[in-house]
Amino acid sequence: MRLKNPLAGWGPFVLALGGTQTIGYGAVFYAYPILVPAIAAEFGVSGPVLFGVFSVGLLLGGLASPRLGRLLDQIGAAQVMAIGSTLAAILTASMAFAPNFISFAVLVILLQSISFAVLYDAAFATLALKEPDDTRSAITRLTLIGGFASTVFWPLTGFGVETLGWRGTCAVFALLHLGVALPLHLWIARKPPVARTGPAAPVRAPRPEFPAIAPDQLRRAFVLLALGFSVTGMVIAAIGVHMVPVLIDRGLGQAAFLVAMLMGPAQVLIRLVEAGFWRNFHPLSVAIISGAAVPLSFCVLLVAGQGVALAIMFALLFGAGQGLASIVRGSVPLVLFGPVGIGARLGRLAGMRSVMAAAAPFLFAVSLAGLGPVATLWVCVLLGAVGLGALVMLRASLRAQGRWQAL
Image 1 (cartoon, one colour):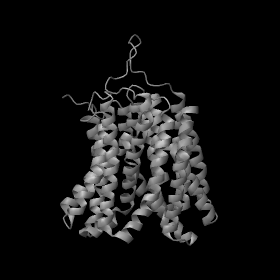
Image 2 (tube, rainbow, N blue to C red):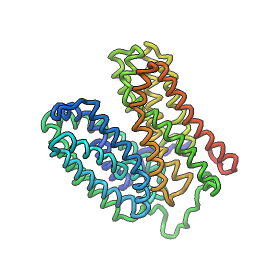
Image 3 (spheres, helix red, strand yellow):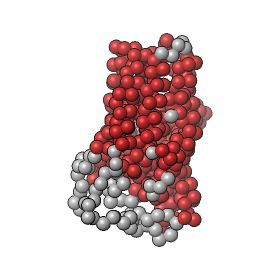
Image 4 (cartoon, rainbow, N blue to C red):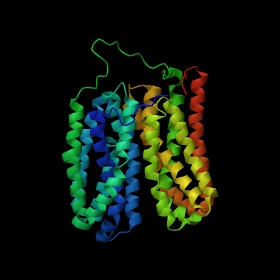
């Protein structure tokens, strides 16, 4: 089989959105834990309180996502992203001048509440409109760029706190939203979709392996997809916060930090594999691989004990599942339901996923305290199996309808 070069075909929309996603995820999400100690010291509050504020914002962001998703369809995805960048700049700049903890907390919650407008789901909807003939590949390339947000913003934020203080760092982030992300979103909004066929070329028919779902099966398919994505996302969110303590509990000691660091490279590697080796797979098949990797990784961790090799296997499997999850949450809805109304569907999926993800770290902590680490890991295995089962049921349903020609 001839492999497509995964680094070929990087269009201007992908590169532009890659830059805005790096800023979005870096400044809105990854920077916050690095800022917390300095903010806590100035306002005289504890770190857990600040993380609680962040979780409230995530919860409200999940509740706001369906409405924001409908706006993507109504006024245009890139236009919504431009508005989101403007609001993110205003809120982040206001955080830099917050006079007290209460005002700061309100601003953090508001920022998280509108984050859907500047992050992956809005970007995926933008690509569905701007790269209609190659959306799946464009999504994969976009997540490859966005995957480096933490790599860039963790050290950048740490350096900013040391040199400018947390307030100065927030001001810099506001300038990035306003001076880089906003102009790029406005430029994307003005540009027409990429034309991939010649002037005389016929309009391409829909690919036969990706047929539309029967109208009477749309609701059931959406529910199964939402369940699969939400439960898997909940498990990913829970272990993402508690990974290092869990690895330490499994007897890894200081090696836990090195093992956890492997997740990032695993995410990038699996996205390259998806772009090159699995590009002809049905996106739902890739989603099933992602859903299987997550519970399997916990099974490996349960038998890892003090074995570093098995712990490394856990990190690689978990990182692979997480890396694919970012891709399939955009490509699967597009393939199953089509581009019409994609913003609203992505918004609803993001809302359910975000609400469950917001509660996941707290519930995981409660389970750790009440049931212990081993039982909690088994709970994660069971939840992961539920998410995987929903995706497998969806695949079986499509096959039963005779609407699945490619695996």
